[in-house]
Length: 397
Image (cartoon, rainbow, N blue to C red; front, side, top):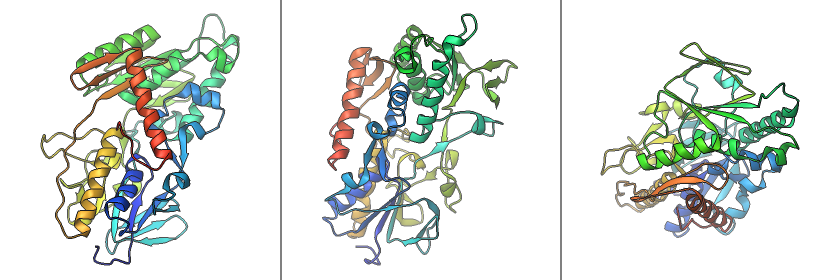
């Protein structure tokens, strides 16, 4: 048990990683370790489904399809929930401070605070673009798209609402496809015109790091959906309704969405510890912080290098869940006086949603696309949400 057994294990963030860590520590310690889970919201957000802008627009502000109440998830787990916003973290002597002044001392700490949009110093990007990394942001975007579509019958000539998505990774790709294939006439009203969707990949290749066959199928499905791809040109400035590119061209739009990258939250970037790209916490092989064996970090907030391959572990929900299980196991091992095991990531597969009933994915060496891939993705998402509601882990992730 910890050096001060009276202090709890404090888990910061109730996303995919934090929720799993909290439950796993209780289970693996057979209830011997007290766990406090801290989050700003009373709900667990299904963040990997926030690209569903058409459905979010139809829901008209109802968050329930994309959230699960934390009280329901945590009942009978023994995990205590503390709602609040983390203001600062003192690794020594070991205190988390919340906005409002509340202090929570800890015996062990697991940082799972996720990530925020990285704007790379581009003027106007933060102020003049939408993002979908939080439910509130996705709801604002959905409302803006729905309104643009509602008034689109009054546009002059053949003009259609235009939406510019900045970033050709999984998030930007899924979002572009969703907007392009939603039946906006049903959602926003009769006569709504099909949107003009432009996906900017910037300097990074389209869907960088994913298998070539998956990328090829994704590119073709996007083309059929009417999404235009613009490669190799970075954004240098964003104004209301205008995206300026480094080649001097200007894209006018009804809304611009920033999906160009992520970084650690400010409260993490200021910690006096080694940091990786985007201020992420550079953890050791057992997912603890170098020099702080009772502090762990997992999920998007951490830069994790696979001990076997030397490759960086991707920032995905699947990886976050695997990291969380490993961190919980190592934390309990340390508490019971045993060494932890280096983390090794084994990816089960990756699937990118590509609009209504379409997707492309790689499951091992097998590439799937179209409706079968979309069905697999939906099954995985639904299995996770049902498992979360019942307070257990997903069987498929």
